[in-house]
Length: 253
Image (cartoon, rainbow, N blue to C red; front, side, top):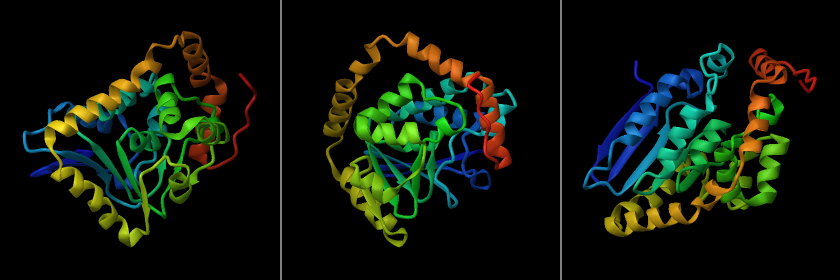
């Protein structure tokens, strides 16, 4: 069974995460399907890509059961490829977030050009609470959209933030009551769909290129620290504790 759907209606293309029974957690199959879909060039009539999901949760992040089972060793690479594809999609991308967007789900939303969220949704990066750390690529996106103060709150504390708080911090574009989410999203989607396609492509390329400077900053030492956290006993304990719904015991090793 496929994990996503990919549909086009004139100027609007919609990719939908469709694994609601697992809170739309990103397993290897879903990441492969997303990568393949995003590698497909926009149709001539396309003006905007919408990313949304079925069920009550937008995306719970990487599938921890796959990671702890060993299938996702080095698991940041597939999700980074997907997020890179979202960020570099030739046309604007709008995330419609009806429910919680956690860890990789948070990053998926924030790599879109616009995030329209229900006031019932929460956003978070709880990596510090399970012994992991974001890669350079993931952290620089948070800095880009959130700024240093909010990024510290998101990463170092690890507690989720409400969609309303995310809007107040300027991290997401719109927040709406649950029953007004679709109309709020349509205001942005329909405006983009009516705009000039060559202008949209040029502006998207310009914005992506102007933020690319952080890629050239040396960070191999930081990568080593992140990898040490990812492969630590604390990380194994943190993931196991999260799956078992208990508090972890960290020992710094």
